[in-house]
Length: 176
Image 1 (cartoon, rainbow, N blue to C red):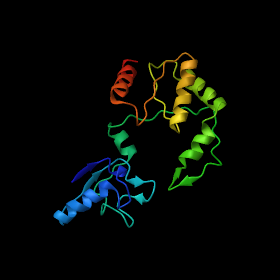
Image 2 (cartoon, rainbow, N blue to C red):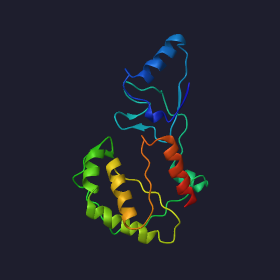
Image 3 (spheres, rainbow, N blue to C red):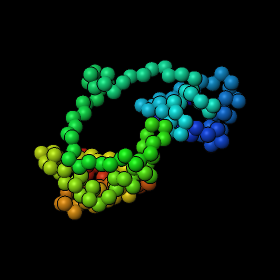
Image 4 (cartoon, rainbow, N blue to C red):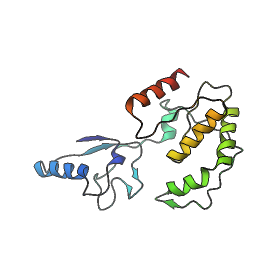
């Protein structure tokens, strides 16, 4: 069984996905499950090949982002230090990542959003388009509203965005 985006497989053994794989193993005890992912770490339990509910036995191949940049597969990240500062000192972490709800509460604030969007517009004045990642669905809506308020056309895509609408937003983004 080949599974893409293997980090999305639930860690719990009582899910439909895991029951399906368990049923396949019952039919064929020699079944091999191969997972492909760029992120072999699961927020709820760590590495995909470690722990009680691990589906995989080991990692067969790893490559770092730096190596992929050096080999020309990824573009190097060119960042500018923002003037807008985010205070995440009171945001907790779980499994090495910020707790999403706490992060959203810390950064989804009108004054921060206004300042950050203004800064993005200033830094990107010579660019045709931008792609912005936000801390939550509400944060993304607020950021999009601020871009539009400042005269920049902006669309948003979420997990529940219908395919036709998603395709049109992506096509519009590609058109600039």
